[in-house]
Length: 112
Length: 117
Image (cartoon, rainbow over all chains, first blue to last red; front, side, top):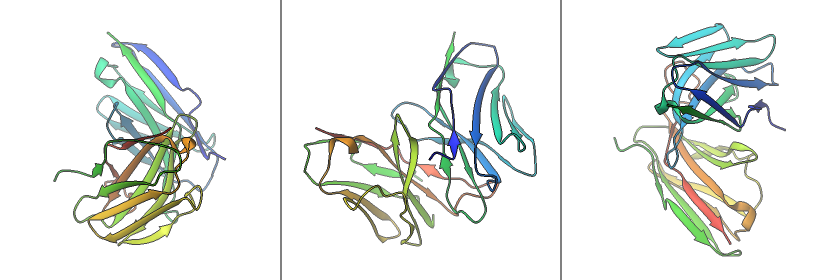
């Protein structure tokens, strides 16, 4: 049973617009969340994280929002660029888990 | 640092054969993780080591899978015998800690694409 779910396998957005990638989780003990970005033929690379004491974390064009009551997080990319085209994975963990649970990924395509 | 190194990058084998995937973590990282990526299940954690000791192998799908870390700079994931459903991309990742802090994270290798015919 997947504890972290990304229900949209793909998303297509026009360059310059906002990309919103969603992630849901089931385990209320999760208190730390990350987004990874993966290009073809490469391993995932860390993008941005958020802990449960916050509901928002920004890093340049990337913002992650956390809604603990809904067990939902989202990644906003504004403005989207063609170089953002990749697969995005969300992951969740808790301090005493020592491991991450990953979603199945969302493939983002930003069209020029 | 060269990052996490995995070999081979691609492996094609026939059902029943033994497959060995290799990983060299980033020097100084105490944690090593093996993941499998499939279309259906995304990234699944198979096993992870801390200071060369296996800590959690609950994700290893069957007894056909085994992993070792004989020293801090080398780990192997072995499948014997391999089956077509093992076809996937296998990633190795390392981290100075579990990656639960706000500043540290897991660093992934480029992956090994395994095809079992």
